[in-house]
Image 1: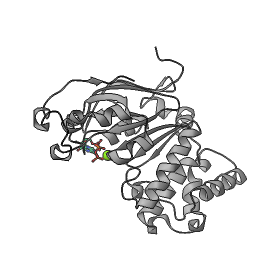
Image 2: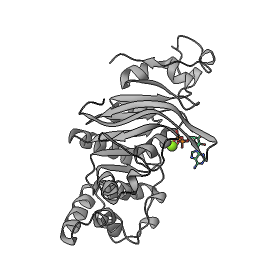
Image 3: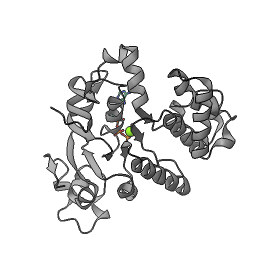
Length: 274
Ligand SMILES: Nc1ncnc2c1ncn2[C@@H]1O[C@H](COP(=O)(O)OP(=O)(O)OP(=O)(O)O)[C@@H](O)[C@H]1O
Ligand SMILES: [Mg+2]
């Protein structure tokens, strides 16, 4: 039985794309309200797939996923009432903003979700204005989103998610392709959202900013298994683990206790003390 504070729970989730490309293998974890969690692992380990499961975009082949203590299944998401509630509580900022922006103008893009929710026009306008101001993109309101720069598109994508005021925010590689100033801005925004009580789950391989964006890390191996789940500091200090999942190179950490190659094919679940 899950406790009151559990917002999301994956139980032994396995998933293969098209029934033959493995992406997740027996993954279990829970996320509590207000937590700030990073999903870590090398390219192709399954981070984006976890976020897609959490957003109800793909469904486990085996195992189960509950959000807010309710099973999230294909059937459940066919129910209009359920899908509207779920979509308003969970927001997803994609890895690739081009896949997320499609409206003729930034204003329409950001208004799309609230209008879908059935909010009336004055309320939508007010929300959109607030979010555009908050993300410092009011001056882009009448521009075409697909013509904006990568960093501007990212802000629009974040705006279109925040305008819904979701409880849970899923970010896929949020700082990738942003310049240093924009990265700093996004890290600060994530901290602010966390402080305001949001639950935040971020897929990343940016180890440098990890402590600024997450208190807990869930680590995936290249064979799509969850291999560690613990406080960010403990994960960062576990050089052998980071080498084993190919997040750091052998030569990058001269203080490693053992050469990385000994760990490459090792398995086992590191349970790190909280
Ligand atoms: N649409 C798809 N069709 C087939 N296989 C896919 C698809 N999307 C992902 N995969 C495969 O699933 C596995 C996990 O992919 P996923 O995108 O979740 O990894 P990731 O950890 O997010 O990687 P990255 O760091 O490169 O973003 C990979 O082996 C990938 O090739
Ligand atoms: Mg990814």
